[in-house]
Figure 1: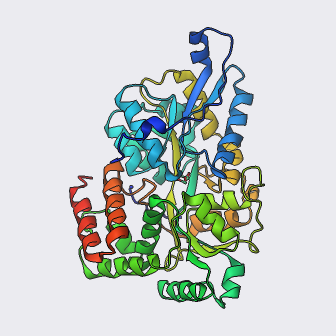
Figure 2 (figure 1 turned 180 degrees about the vertical axis):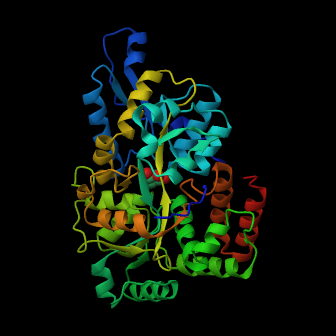
Figure 3 (figure 1 turned 30 degrees about the horizontal axis):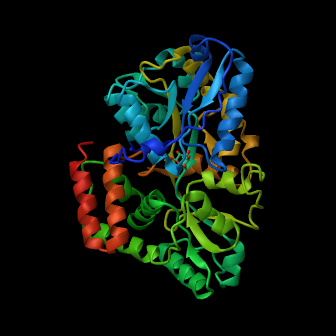
Length: 428
Ligand code: GAL
């Protein structure tokens, strides 16, 4: 099977003081040095409902296999990790890295590599023969000059339209919208019924929506060209795509605090649609101690975001070995679990993702996840913007700022100019 791959903070320091890690490593009666050797600080942004379940499943395997080590959860709350990455940037700058941190395969990871923040993990790929189990194209996304810099734990899909079958029925939407035009017609019908047509969360969820609208409106080839020397950010196709975005956004409800409350509006039958990555599946489906315990096809259903059928917009979470990790051996032990079939098969069904490994146990991936596995193996590919595949942190920040301003101004021409500038200045 042939696949085409795309290679993919102005976060103020203010507010960082309020960011707290969830550390649950606990203390012990031993000396501080002995504690440090035991504790493995794992930095991510998987604190919220749905997200935390996958991490917990992998933590349990880690602690079972490494009785001398304690997992220290340094997760920083906030979907998509914008807040976590801001704190991480200050830690890396101060040479006080965590033992391992989550970074997206693609341009985001390449940024850490170029900055010299990461150690090569070729030794691990050699020891565990990992080159045989990960798709070569994925390894390319996390490599520079033959050195590999992370361990990918999953593949997520960004371009998923989640919807409430109950709300759609009430509104008389009889066909799941497959095109942007049909989507807008369906949004209008839901609006007429007095329900929220499209739920959104905090700012990043709007950029997440934008990437699906760009893909659906421009088509896969033109979308993938945006990240090459032949990009066209200023032409009429982009103007049309941004007008589509404006129309769709005119049906958005009040912004919720993050992606979970926005997704919950759909699962509770208060909203018709939300466009969100498939971490939403873990949240909908997992039992109520972490998820919503909802019933697939009854409380929620899914389809590719309008206009994107046949294309899998991908992203991949991967774990790194930062230079100067205080507990390097502990970090390597974590990476071994993250790389393993057992670790990936425990993590992914809970996380709402499919494994990065090619040899995982397919029988564990049922319902939505079976669809994802099938599409991953057969669809065209495109890289996510918001989740670090196609753009590095600086470029993503510029896109986020442009979209934030657009939410105030509703000025499509200004948005297009700002996006074209961001691309020009990206230096990527
Ligand atoms: C993405 C990340 C996913 C999920 C999502 C929402 O950036 O790759 O694993 O956590 O954010 O928080």
